[in-house]
Length: 158
Image 1 (cartoon, helix red, strand yellow):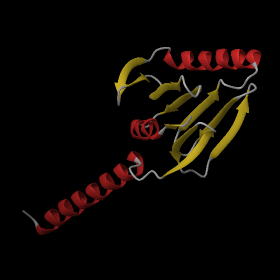
Image 2: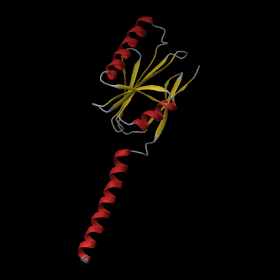
Image 3: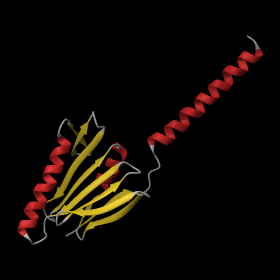
Image 4: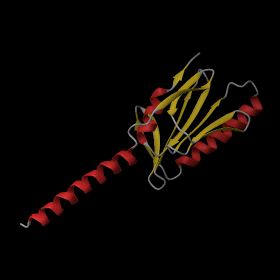
């Protein structure tokens, strides 16, 4: 075999390996950093560190955090507000949003929690709650590793 051809093949293989490793690191996002936030006086959770976080409130008591950098979205609501009419209204809103993510999704289990995965949109969604503290949390992301970490980081307090 010609030395030039062999050198060219080796260079192409090296470039392909570098491109593959770069693509893996860029798209798999294995080094996601997390910060712990207080969702309510009775609940904390880890969320990805991001420069693209938007936090706002819908309804009377539903808060949401949207992280476009990590394609992560969380909605939370503590139904122990004391105002029955706003609690019912916000509970219905949150349930409607939760149910909209279930459309076309398949149910699976991650860490003993029910998760829905939509093959068309590539989103994972889970809805977690605590009957004692009345915290209700909707988590949506395309990254299964982020979902797993966030789900396992939730702490409820009396």
